[in-house]
Image (tube, rainbow, N blue to C red; front, side, top):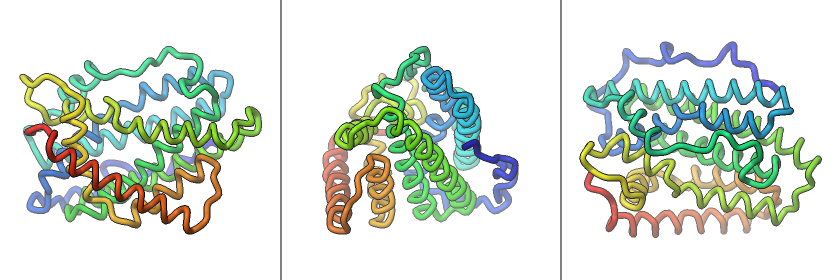
Length: 279
């Protein structure tokens, strides 16, 4: 199941000569800065996954490849952010991020309770990021960022496919029930509001003198990102999440889930407007 990377895009190949500062949206810039830190931190997740799947040599190699691409995403997003805002110090922001947010890379068993559960969680993450970068590519008018986000969205969808292939392998061995799979999937969706992204937003955008608080930083991210989602982006994300959880669904069920997701996003943005940080 190992992926081929010899033709993978390179940062130098992005259309940097077409960069247009007049098309940089300062609100999108803030969430791009945060995303650059999360993506660049993939090495920690790779260490954790390689420990959990220590006996699977093929998967460990795929994780190395996955981490290299995720790190490249962070580097490319960081380079774009510096062009858009020369005052942004990517290295300092990343150091601030990792000083305040770390995962336990020493665990040897999945925090999801099983290898199948771990693959479900990874699929949920990739379904979100694939939809997220597709949304950003559609939302921005800046040519370099648009091209970069298209590349990243395609990578994230391919990563989803990779993890889903391994999900199929491990689900045959562990026979995790549909209800348990859905529970893991929903728990990972809920975790999107944990400290990982909130702290990245904080580390990338907050003045040095400001202390970290999860709620206002989560809110600040939401009010900038969620309104950019269009129905087609949510439709794509819902379909991938259902697939990862092993749930077949009717058109009615899918549309109901899409409407629910859109409604939840609107409610969260409305609430977040009252609690967001000043930066």
